[in-house]
Image (cartoon, rainbow, N blue to C red):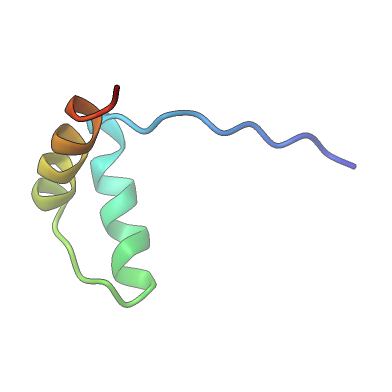
Length: 45
């Protein structure tokens, strides 16, 4: 079985996340994802 590594996303991943989001039927711009990630990462405790 192959190992899977999961890491925390960062703002540099916004464009790729936006592409995936759109492909899955959830339209979002890279800028919207960047803002969402910033809020999400700033709220982590």
